[in-house]
Length: 417
Image (cartoon, rainbow, N blue to C red; front, side, top):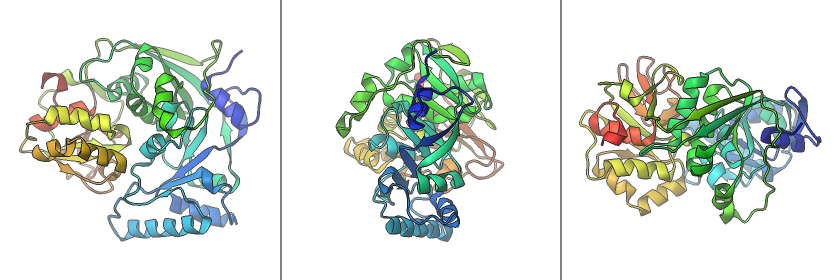
């Protein structure tokens, strides 16, 4: 019996010829990422009596949640992290103004390659599974042990194959695909499972779509989301000059579950409050007013996402009752958007542009909601109080849907604009 892509990566990381779901392995980590949560990692690291990280070149620390620092507490967190990385000689530290949102930085910075085992102190670490890596979020104490030893205890997850076929429609996005999948699986449908995406649609779409898809496997409860590397992956990583051995699932690999989706007639999808799996087609939502539109986050803050919104907004004005916030996912995307004139379009439309940050996505700063307000957002979660008041409402959609809704002041089908 062959192995899946995920099983092959974990077998290699643990020095085994093969692994099966349920096996317990001690795996060597290829890359460890932390952000502001690093302060808790540091505390656990010191409590363990550890003095030196196992490999400073395999650790990346990125400030991204409160950027720039929004209060004294976040400023103190940043200060403590700066001290630690200096003492440990961790050069892979991206401070304010030097990076962006962690998951985007790992992808665009060439940190993650196919076949790697990647761990991060953030639940959306599976984002870079889009590059063919086994990427997963872990806790602070686990990360402290990784910092000290470079190893991680893991249970090999069961495998789910998601086959997506059909052509992605006009003004549609990887976000629409993953919302459709979550609508079917529900928030608990893939708990501690490795969700592998394949099919003609996945093969045809770009890396930015794939990143959005793997990013939101977390909302299904998955341990990781992963897509086999191909020519698009090689092209995306070609600038790095780094060599890697592509890892692919065997033809006779065993999956504990398989589901197929045909997106040929799929319309834009919107996740409605209060859960990510409360997904409806945009045609099902009539006269849903919004007071805020947010474009950004590790899910949909890439240059392609900004271009999509700019296509909708060019020559137009955001509705008088809506405030629109744009946050590119990284410093390099910010610069590219400026060079392409996208910011001119956003500013002319009366949108405001903020520094790369997680910010409003998790209710940190830079665009929180008051009681009774609703936001159409390109982020990944819409739980109660996620973006501010527990009496506010968050709807999730693609950048196309966010921009169209900003124009009309209510959730709008971008294909109709």
